[in-house]
Image (cartoon, rainbow, N blue to C red; front, side, top):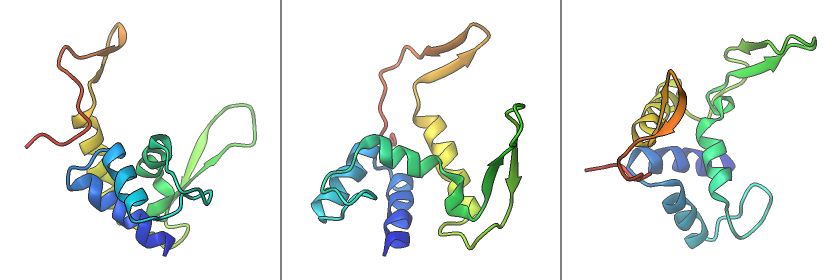
Amino acid sequence: KKAEIVRNIFDWYLEGASAVGIKKRLEGRQIKSPKGKDTWSKHTIESILVNMKYTGDVAIADSGSSGNQYMLGDHHIGIISKEQFEAVQIERAMRSNVEITEEGRKRRNTKYSSKRKK
């Protein structure tokens, strides 16, 4: 059942729903959050959308002080495809109003909308 919820979150995002729109859908269907609460946070949904573990891959941190991470591919059976995960990451970048320039991060002059533009 939890896997189906994750699949729905990815599907809804690619259909154009924002994190807040997904939150409303989940709460409207009375689906409990991962912590068993009646309400979902926008942050929880955004965390799900960027977490590669749902594809079956895992990032493992180096135990030393170097801060290196290693990718362990196909660690477990994925809930979503790697292609769907990548599509969501591309969609997130297109919807974002943050640009990374030589001076650092800055907001674009256009008004932000986390919804897909039609």
